Image 1 (cartoon, rainbow, N blue to C red):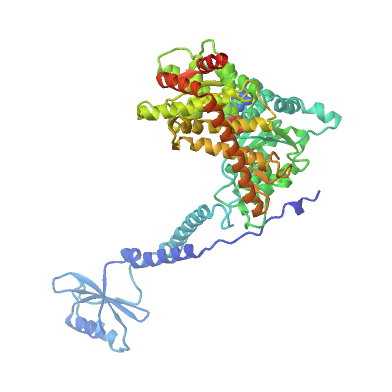
Image 2: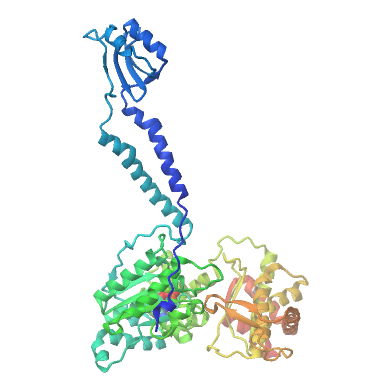
Length: 622
Ligand code: ADP
Ligand code: MG
Ligand code: ZN
């Protein structure tokens, strides 16, 4: 394939050298005005020709020098000091006679006069001072200015570029991470095992004539272990590991990023077999487009990367791994065969995966018998990084409480800490507020428990958290649901509205405590209409697309504004219906609501078991 077409070199852009020139001029002026006179022999006073003749006649002049129309002379002043004067030379044929005949305070009694300016600096020194020094200072300033301009322009422009990237990239040749450190992610490991094998024995593949993919792209949400697994590949293959993050290529000087890429590949091919890992590659690999003017430095770097990837011999044993959580923003050219053609998906861990990750990290701390399944169930949607953090928080809590082993309750508490914030020690809730919060939380729990499809409750607490949550109902999915039915989703919304419904029933008034519930319920209902095709009205029409799926995902509507307004009505209908359902459930089980809320008020934290006991007592009696 013709490389040139795909990787056009952008025309270099000239920076504005004006400030540098201005600086140079200022420097020369400064030197002439203040510095050079210091090298001259004392101050020179300008005077008129008449004074000069007068002084000569008065016998006060010691020396006279004539140079290019100027007369310099030293004269003895009245105080007995010598001073130097200057005056313009007037057409005066008698001057020489006058000087010869005049008397002088000199030892010889005669004026000594020449036509050369004495005591002038040596020509070489003068040359250095007048030209080389300002030139040097000028150059240094230029360099400095161009650097700061580069920094300000964010690596755009092509003001000055020095061919050397300067920084050497160090290879980590003794990576200790192995696949055992990466829990779950079996599919990713399987895909990478082949690469490990290739790095162990490139010849085996070369003999058959097979070329392994030059690059593999690790894709997935943040914290799923992409960086970790890349290191593990190096650790398993026992080869040097060149790790760089995409942003490190984007340098202050234009051309430096490209130079760094060149350096990197040069060093890597010397050390082959080895792994090059470019983390967060979207920093340089973003799609090139003309609409926003583009970024020269980034594009040059990307072009260099593409060229290098094409240029090196895949059979040598250099494997390039890259990671990103924004695969859709990558340049197409990066993804074509022969470059990052293998894509390895790293997903958020499922129930088993979470358990495995917790185990890996728990093995690093001293712990008691711990029931991990509860923790794993309570952390649906958490990434590996969050789970690692939960284990660490638990260990910290154990230390704070002076214990030597981590217990299950440490882990449970730290789940809440990580997901909802730290407990507020001195809560300022009044008794009435506490009652409201208790009813609100029991409202959620009761609606959840009485709808068959909703997850049972694990724990309810009304201890305020730093995240702003006043209470907290921890729901636990027993199995992991991959598919959610329309009823599941609707019941979830009903559960979310349960808190507010309980407030309405018990107090006849409503509070701000439901704001987070409202947000979540609305989002769910909206997704049902726009993305899951779960409204009768719009059937299976897709009304929204999700961008940046791995980074929270922002949605954009793909329908007309009339439809958008109608979607709002549809969402409102669903939320209202769910709210009505929750109210109905609670009002027909008012006795449970009151008893459980009182119980929670006293205890502040109750387990799902305690709660279910109250529920069962009533439902069995009925
Ligand atoms: P990413 O690069 O995908 O954003 P990292 O690889 O930096 O995520 O993961 C951050 C940390 O999370 C790791 O250092 C590790 O402690 C933990 N972690 C993430 N995924 C896993 C996993 N599958 N197994 C064990 N630990 C994991
Ligand atoms: Mg990472
Ligand atoms: Zn709530």
